[in-house]
Length: 263
Image (cartoon, rainbow, N blue to C red; front, side, top):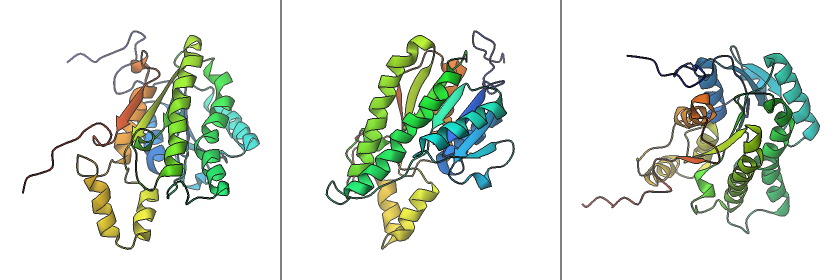
């Protein structure tokens, strides 16, 4: 079998050879899976996280608080210096929120938007000068099915991710002329430590897990590896004509309406 190569010689499976990537929120969950996959496929990868102490080789870790512009700029500069440039930015850092529109006070709205939306703004803003120097520049934002489907008890979280989706499309339009592709991934409910903590706090964790699994047509939670695979697809030079795209990785949750089983 002949290996597939793109027009510039990147081989499928090692399509990130020679490229440098930065992943925010990369110490755990989707971010850690994405950073590991990019590294396995040939990239040099730096992770930005509030606590990068668990990050080990071949990844490098840098402490950053995405709510602090100075912290972000310093961490991006240090990571780019270590990597020797930057080709790929994965904006993955984020936090969750529960409740209806009346359940969270103004302080909580500001806190979540500061991380989930402005965190993307700050990191991208710091990375853009370096991405402009790359022949394979790509930005991938971790969004959510909550941006496209009405979910109960997720008003604040949905608003923050809806803003990330809109920002992704606007960024794609702004920077396509500079050769910078911008896309986002919309995962469904992913089996991550954050979801695990939500389940542990529920009155009946087993029933809560069953409910989360049942609302995805595949009948199970999305894995972090599956979300990472979608991020890698969008970041890859093999996807050089893909920009302004929202890729659902949600087990069919947003788009499918399967018939219920007949008993």
